[in-house]
Length: 409
Image 1 (cartoon, helix red, strand yellow):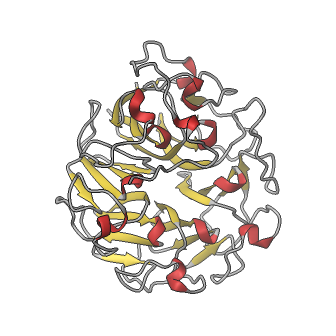
Image 2 (tube, one colour; image 1 turned 180 degrees about the vertical axis):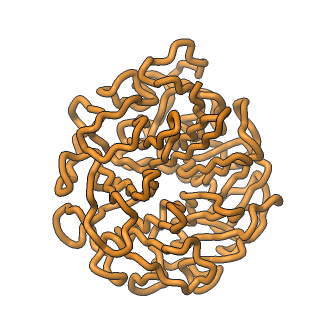
């Protein structure tokens, strides 16, 4: 029996579709800044808010929470189906089918641990995905580990070459069954390579781990830096105290600012905290977005929203605008993606554009109306790709059971 995955704060009733059909938007809000939906992977109708069928297909998604795009492919963490899908190229039409499925024996199987075949063959709620120097990396969050393929697989059900965070491919206990260490994980949701360093949002341990020389090649290689805790063996929320400039509640995504800095989406504190240069030790953050200062972590769910406030920001990505590095933030509980044309370091820096809402004060799931190509319901992961001819921003629109490829025209 399929179990429904609800986003934080959502109810089953709130995820039921309206009667209206999904239709292409004929007039997009001007706040979109030239961005428009190009293709939809996964659910493409009002039925997208219904619980998907128990037997998946190569083109169906269930609560996807991570995505990657580069010049050759799209990678989706199909979280609710406990698998990762690889699409060759950049899909241009709705409903494209994946070319490769990882974590399951075939395109119609679902369930954690490869539908019972075991952790060595499967996954349990994978989230973050990326490709770095030809290697595929997957944050297998609820198995408390990171999986690495030395080359991007071209065949379904290819096993990983390396497991980080566990003693072997069958072990799945948080923190290797003991206390936290510089080699263990507890719900590692977000992963990134930032200026050559491999960075992990180790969400359940309320910390961020940094391997300065890049992706480890040995499972026992400890992180060089532990951010957000007093040491590698601690895991309390906000270091056991109040919100501060050196603590996390739920760190969930990491991104570079294009100038040597680092930004962490600290979803549980409704903020993103940043360092102007990538930390080489556990040092306080330099700036914050989404809150007025570095000691505030308040949620404001029952008031008119603004562009400078966040509610559970689970995703982030850098974007390129006219040769300048900008920022995209998945403001998850506000059902929108906020865009800055220039990467902000000031909490008062208002975003330039918003996706999924008609203005900066609205925050309804699918605009409190119906599923449309440009609406959002609990967006999680983001990824971008830019070259001279292509400008893509991919949104893992988790509550709508789809990934939407947005393009800037």
